[in-house]
Length: 179
Image (cartoon, rainbow, N blue to C red; front, side, top):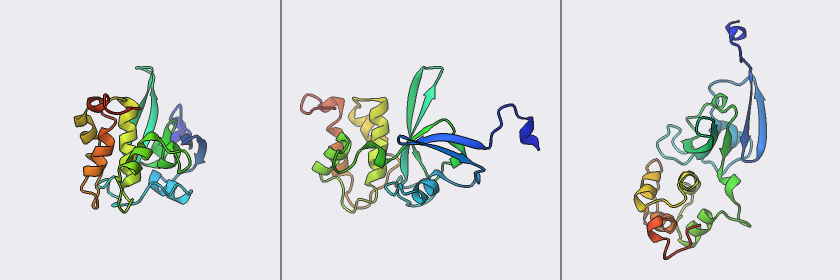
């Protein structure tokens, strides 16, 4: 078999989902991260369009960049990510950033700002914003608006979402606690 000619070939991958280490072998290359998450009870990540157009399935991928000696945080559509591409990465889902008893500050402000109506898109929107804040803790209003480019919301008209998110903006820090 050709794979035995490859020096680092392995049919096993290791990655984290939130703080849980996962070891998987003999994966079907067509299996997406979204399918895996939903099958194993991570139901906060939603199936919307299945084509990367709505952002309901947004998660954050954390990966160490050895050249920069830092961790990169990237929001990604889990419906498009092959599970076999996640070796040595951490996947952060909505369940991994907070819960009703101890919400993440983003979740808390979105709830206080009535930034959700039906709630279906909310986990993906929060994860897109979480990725932005991980790489840029004091974003501008323009950065915030741009971070939601891949997320659709059919209920709110975006105003309450943007108002809650902009409470973290560097342009509004004098008025609000930005952390």
